[in-house]
Length: 249
Ligand SMILES: NC(=O)c1ccc[n+]([C@@H]2O[C@H](COP(=O)([O-])OP(=O)(O)OC[C@H]3O[C@@H](n4cnc5c(N)ncnc54)[C@H](O)[C@@H]3O)[C@@H](O)[C@H]2O)c1
Image (tube, rainbow, N blue to C red; front, side, top):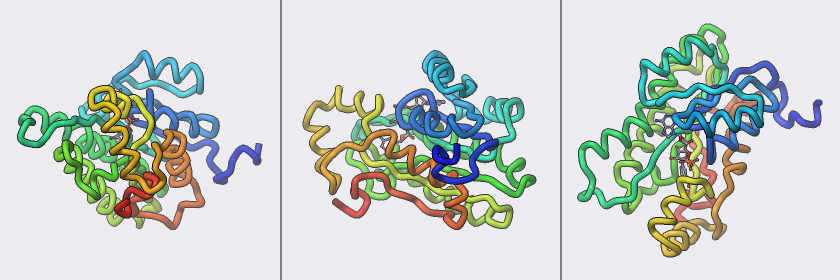
């Protein structure tokens, strides 16, 4: 029904959402699933399957930092018109308390996965002369993070990568944009609050101009817009969905 399609011609497009089983990714899957064929690419197959039953989406159980596994899934389930690189992990520790193994895992899941999924998806998008790459970064990339130096570095890499992919692929009708969430009410944030307590929660909400946490659906709305035809003239951008945190609140 036209009334349920606020962003125009979306039907028939195929979307791949990494980390789509819960949190921000699950909200993106829910907002996309009514309009297009969606694959939830996640390590957590049980949660992905439950969401698939609810939404009619499909499940690919994989570690998206494993480029070979990504290539296989893209070949089996693709081609995709829309790729949302959302899977991520964080770590709360001062840099001097982190190990090389910590850095490798954070960079693999937050940055290498974005490279792997984009690399596997682009050839078909280029051939189709249409594509939408949407990368979920973080305001921590722009502001830095006390207790999240490696996470911020990996997310900063996502912003630079997004701009380069936008430059290389504009001639194919492909756009690449990033979304930078602030503190969003998801299992990732709840785990950080469980460890750090109310002080952490107050620091997070206090860093936003609006003085509250964001909801996963508020990030999903930005992803839905960037995936739509209405966003066809937007590329290489990073859109903050962070209650104003990105302007230094
Ligand atoms: N929640 C926030 O406050 C916040 C703020 C800024 C940025 N972000 C970013 O938003 C994205 C989503 O965060 P969230 O809060 O929804 O996280 P979450 O931990 O609640 O959910 C992440 C999902 O990604 C999946 N995942 C993790 N590693 C994976 C891997 N290697 N392969 C496949 N799937 C994997 C998990 O199983 C989970 O379903 C992340 O990139 C995160 O860094 C979140």
